[in-house]
Length: 218
Image (cartoon, rainbow, N blue to C red):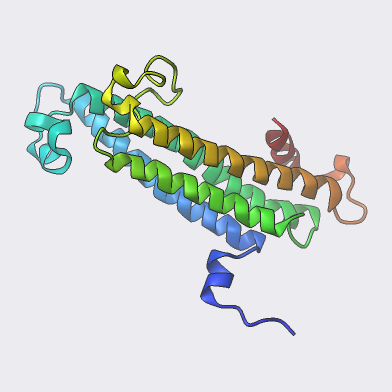
């Protein structure tokens, strides 16, 4: 007898690969919108450098004095835009979505090698998202060391306001993201190597499986 599933067990703490793929997709889409808004803001400043936009000061206060984005906040927007699109949309959102959806279907497996680790992979990703999003609301502002986070801007708190608590939150969020990627990558590799259907050798796998396999290894 199967236990009756609740909303929480079916849609939140679910271990089904298709539902987890949807979770990655929805989270990635939300981040794509947020990252796109960051892009609009700093490109607005680039496109009209001599104009002021009073509505910016209404929303961002001291970060947009006189309706113009301040230099430190401008750099923070670029930092967060690059971080969001590279890690939370392209790497986490798209890879997590397509890998979880396609691997079992294309190799004939019933699910991933470890559905529990697969679920943990998403929730580490989600936790990283919340920490990164919360950095937008700290008093000193979000990280502003560039999305590559090179020193000295990332290492010295006195370098800029965004190099203080915002940078600490950025690093902590990326640590959670790395754990998520590690759990997901190990699951992808184990599933592809050990759970292919009878008769499907490595040379008979679809090219998408090879792409995901080598991406997880690298």
